[in-house]
Length: 306
Image (cartoon, rainbow, N blue to C red):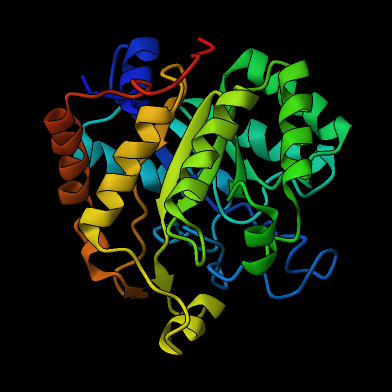
């Protein structure tokens, strides 16, 4: 067991076995790329969507899942899976199309749940009503990108939405019983330590159910790569990042499920920092630092809600 409320521990509690996420590219786009909000996307997002490597291209949802299942059975002996709609904004379509895609995923043998990643400005009420149906009938998470608690940072990284949009989306999800996992990036340009850690306070206040912490890393083909090469974006060293993550966890409500603690980009496209490729080494450093401190998730949370 970890010193934080890890997603792997949550899955073992719920299912009693190893469960693997299988990433899916269902052919969505993003309002921050198709001209509805913007055309360039966030500065860290490449042409295929952030974090979208390793997906079988050109296949339908079921075909992608079956292909990924074969890999996970071989690699991890896993027999239960969660379909992770990851690339771009996976609620950015009419509800009829969404329902057909989600149903196709759940019909694949061994798939026990859904994770749907999207933006807070892609959640009209009719879409949330649909998601609430899947939240009742399956193991379900809605992943919402926020990245920073500061509107100034959201503007600087080209998010195309503000904090108010995120808080409103979380409120409307709670009204429908939909669990939310917030995405936050540590190491964004211009953010102080206290600004970064205020993100934990915000998530506590909103009572989100999950969080993914991402290291700011630079991928080829992004505006961030251009800024980095111009010397305008400093990146964290490994020990700096480990310390910030541990500080963050200490302030985070212990009831929030931690689904990720670092970012790992495609080796072929990663520009920097190269130390991020050693994902398990980073995770071990976080575990060791928490043990050294004698601390746990929520040990410095002033008033845990759960």
